[in-house]
Amino acid sequence: MTDITTRLAQARREIAIAARRAGREPDSVRLVAVSKTHPAGAVETAAATGQRIFGENRVQEAREKIPACPPGLEWHLLGHLQKNKVRQALSLFSFFHSIDSQALAGAIDRIAGETGQKVDGLLEVNVSGEETKHGFTPAQVRAAFPALAALPHLRILGLMTMAPYSENPEAARPVFRALRALRDELECAHGAALPELSMGMSGDFEPAIEEGATLVRLGSSIFGQRPQIQAGAE
Ligand SMILES: *Cc1c(COP(=O)(O)O)cnc(C)c1O
Image 1 (spheres, rainbow, N blue to C red):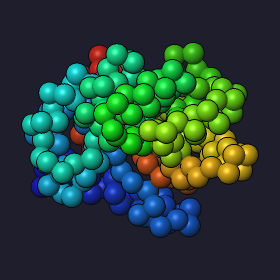
Image 2: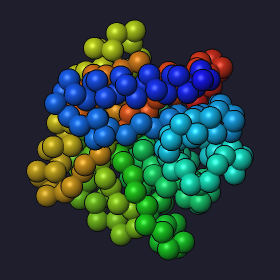
Image 3: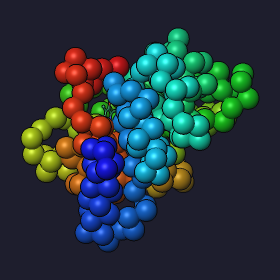
Image 4: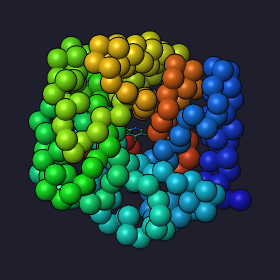
């Protein structure tokens, strides 16, 4: 077994244990294997174990990598997307985790309308308030939600966040709890269905699952460390 195969199996076990600990079904949590900076061969190895969902954060990198990967995989965009790359992104990705402004949502909706697509995505919320992070503030999401939910070609399925980096996974728990509370509030206030919560990365996916994550985004714990310069790149 390769390292990737072993680490994927380990991650799936840990996800299942965290889900059961929270009284959830393990298959209520989907694993996004974050392959950014890693070659198509790494994706192929992971896909051979049955992994189907892969995440990338840069359109340019994805455009080169995806055609070299096995067919039939589901590609998710995780990073900040510039409006001038929306058209390309729509041809590569089926799911957008990080819709971080009303202008971007509008651009995705408009171009999806032109190409006859119906796009699924999540609103990225900067729960922690860190200045370096993209995303709506909770107040901005509350204000913009009715307009966003009404876009005809973009279907908002939930919320996404990134917790501040910490050595201690428990430090992220209040951020995850707050994202879930915001989701519950929006569902209640607008009668919306927002089933998806994308939260939790290699260092903090266990508290994220306990707090309700339906999508966890694991990169380094599956594929190994990335070159430092790429960590958190857009
Ligand atoms: C890179 C990245 C991840 C994966 O991070 P790891 O710590 O390697 O698991 C998850 N989410 C986003 C948005 C990322 O950019």
